[in-house]
Image (cartoon, rainbow, N blue to C red; front, side, top):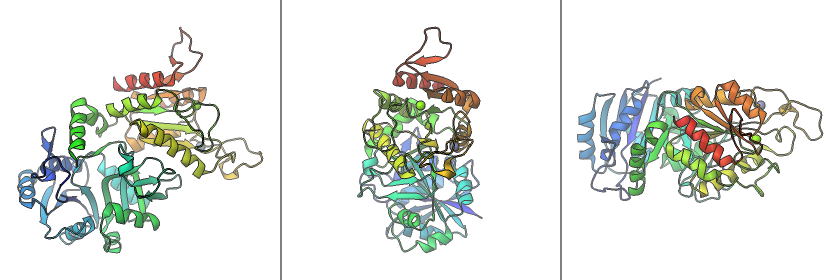
Length: 424
Ligand SMILES: [Mg+2]
Ligand SMILES: [Zn+2]
């Protein structure tokens, strides 16, 4: 299999900070976006980038001539008429014999493990992949969410997405030549191919907590530049193993009692959204790890549980906060109860204090568990943290002054302590 990158230099940029300048030439931290795109490919097998340029094509050509051969060969293809991203991609495909295309929307600043994406996508065996992450502007994004069974749900922003967790396309895709020919009649990769491929079970969603941010409007460009200055870009975009902040859900993000088996009445603990937002702004990946035995006990369905998460995401989002990933154990070991789901009533390795969820998060998100922190309210969380080699921060109303461990009666304070641990 041969893969190439296709960089879509984009439309007229009427929303961009400087409409007279090609988007790929916009600079962040002293380097053009195109230079950042090439850097993205550096640790991957991809050694060629095709740039499809229309508007301000001469500028793009000049920029790419300057950058070529540093990391990958770069060829600029000039598009005569702009007829959507799929047409641009098909044009690029005519200029190469590659079987796979990594599709980069030109105005996204990215630092993420591209080879990991390619490997996981190939293992999934489907034709199209999309990188998804929580959106900082969910009202303005189509949702793309990978359910517990691997099915991907794509919900356009025009429809209600109240039942869908806050996950959206990050503007990085992969598609096989075969899939491109099947979806070649469509117009846009994001808004047309994704929903179609999702309906056909032909879409893989790669959940990323790395750095991918749209710079297509003046505000967003300013915000990306601020992330570079604050160190958030370096922290989030780090490609070697980095520390992460793990949070239990019940008793840390929302009250432990009553238990939530649906979104009705779901609330956050005071100050938690603001504390998580601090982690987000610092570029610290936030991963929820939660035991949800109510699924095995038959108290809720996977759809109910997904709606609880969607509600949690929405409440966090209303305060500008998000979680990067959410991993849960649906099992419970003791069987023999009325209404239980027999196939979920079993021992497993994903129920805390077992550490399978930490292993999954570490490999999915390139996390160094030894430099990470876990915030939880139970002995199971403590056992999980210790087993995985993480620092444990305890939320408890019964903190003792001579407690040897970090202990806080208020969850938001415990989360802030967790951020301190992973930042040092
Ligand atoms: Mg708990
Ligand atoms: Zn489990």
